[in-house]
Image (cartoon, rainbow, N blue to C red; front, side, top):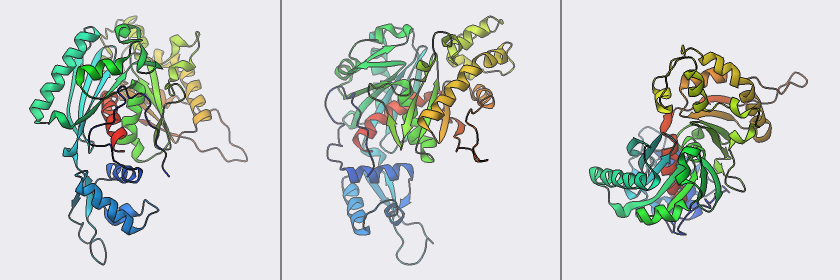
Length: 383
């Protein structure tokens, strides 16, 4: 039976709209269709230890409720009556994801099928209250432009740079002090009129990678989130692993006082490059204008590489992931430079080495955290 990691940080105690009666078996079906849109009903049955008749009933129920769309069969797929294809009905519901980083706020609107309907990035150049007012106005405009029914907004996810304290309180990065140590869930739920989930931004980015990226191919991986600071998230057996206090995957905590200035945080890189006369005004600029020939860049990589290698080996020894994903706002070229320098400590025994993870550069770009935040309400309700 598939384990579900129920998110403990639902602020209002409500469930997402339209989803209160989804059963565990229906969730499993919906998640298979998410990862395999257009799957045939007969192929769907091969992923379950259930009789074809039971699968037929589940499909009929989900179709009758408008959660999935039963389409025409794929021609030429074998003998007998062709099996219909199955897709999620994106029009059934949608969600919103908000990612608050030190320099930018990302907003994503996603339908139930995982289709990104709209995305917007704005500078984070104001306080929390003004930012929430701006986010609400942007979300209202998105709904109007897309012709979305506000009643079908099933919830809002928030990913923020910081660690979880309790409830929906986060201790955010220093530039986000006014977002820290307050119950963000009830505050935002009152502002938006919908249930709100609050997570560390590394966790929401890892969730996006799981549902839209390498999670389609591997079940257990570590996600490294390179932003103003440095963190990440863990996916174990296909589920987000939040840990006992909600901070699993806070890889920045592996660095002691001596190593902290050597962690691969992008703000530290910006400060280092400034000493070589390279003016990088923001992390966004660093990603969009990255130049591998910047003076001082290779020196910085060499400086942080030993601590980076120790951290990667600790992750491998403790978590035993199938893959390590390099994501967040890191430029792909910089991620490759770090990957190229990785050395695995474990040695072969009797000429046979332990299986090693693949090192993968995330293809989701800098918006992974907001996309994952949008997935949180959908996953809570449907998957």
